[in-house]
Length: 224
Image 1 (cartoon, rainbow, N blue to C red):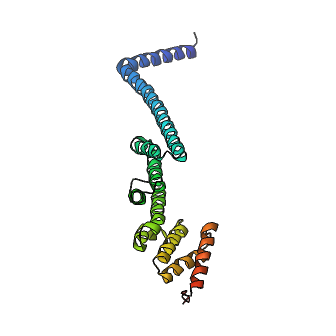
Image 2 (cartoon, helix red, strand yellow):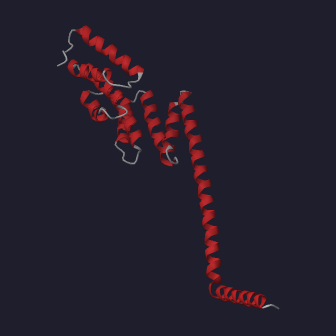
Image 3 (tube, rainbow, N blue to C red):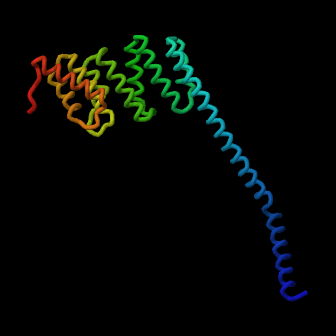
């Protein structure tokens, strides 16, 4: 045997002895770590499956409730949505709350619908965009079922120049002011809509109609 072969053999024997020594001292810990890694992966996969299953079940329940509402079975739809509010997974619970308030409005229970939308709009646990939509829904209902101050309390905070929902908020405020006979305030809100950029076509058209009505009434104020 050459010197090199002898040295390699001794080196391999030494490594083997070291591995045996390490395994003897730490083998059970190594096995434990391996088991934990396997269990962790299994739990993670299991949680993903459970989450997807829950989301799928909630989605099916939400669609079933929407179908009930479309079929005019409002009481059944409302009961299904209320159940989903309690048991729905993820965003479906919030969507069920919004849709339940809409069903109440469709049934003519406007005060209950306004109350539900208002509660959602003030719920810090609900995503901000949905809170804003809820406030708008309450505001539009209050145009016919409240007064200007009620509408303002819901939507004036959304009427600022940088808010994506400002056009709808301003329209609700303008309509509420018109209904209250406050023509100057109504004109101000509708002129803000007409003079803004990116106004949706329907809102712009309605604001122009309202400005024409104000002008025809002879109560329009002159811009300062």
